[in-house]
Length: 152
Image 1 (tube, rainbow, N blue to C red):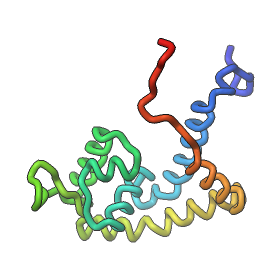
Image 2: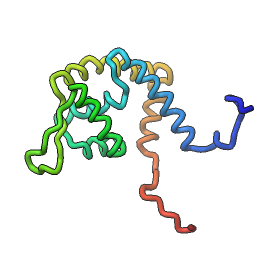
Image 3: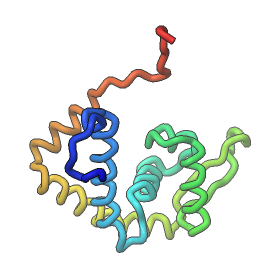
Image 4: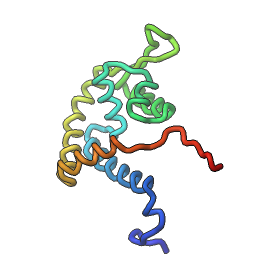
């Protein structure tokens, strides 16, 4: 029987370690944002739109490093719930421009203090210096894009 504390070879996997940490951090932020009825992924979309005022699905997907199809589903939910609008671009009808509605702005304003509290809790749990170092190191990580496999 597999024990949760039993060391495995996969425990040396960098991807597994990053995914585990990411899920744990996501749960922390989701718990803080729950009173606003948001998950961190939804809050980040609202925050990006609050900063940029408008964006296309592709722009949001690129900015938040989310698959375009997944972003499409997420903004579809936010649109259905009345927090964003999607209109044809005035300069190129092939694209739809996304903007916050009044309700979306209000939701972002309600959720921002909850997000700040999650930020503060994460820093308290891990130390502000360690968190700053972690962000710097994560930003500097090199991961090859478009992997090539010359040995295959």
